Length: 91
Ligand SMILES: [Zn+2]
Ligand SMILES: [Zn+2]
Image 1 (spheres, rainbow, N blue to C red):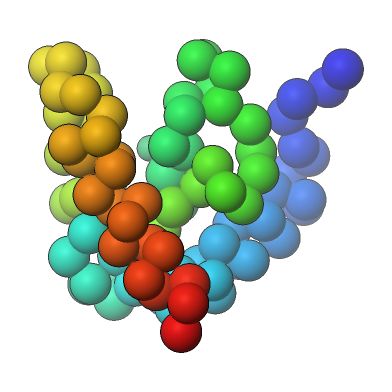
Image 2: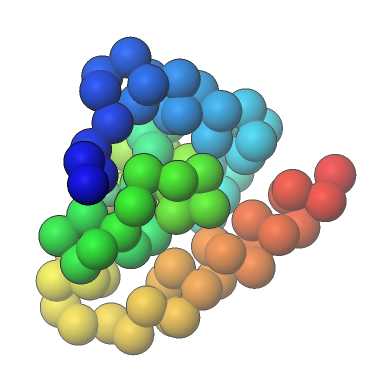
């Protein structure tokens, strides 16, 4: 099974995620430098699905990755984003 989307499909998915998250970083609320982050990394079996993607600004995205690197529990960092994300998606 192919688990990578082609670039066009990925761009569309990315756009859907940005729209779902109201074009805001889900950690700090910034509207600038937005990127889409995989909650479950691709190398850990994360899929290219809307629910596995979150909108983060460049800065928060960087700390998401370094937090992962230094071994923070996912729930500290990502879980926080997830619960916030619930709040956003109910709007
Ligand atoms: Zn990322
Ligand atoms: Zn941010």
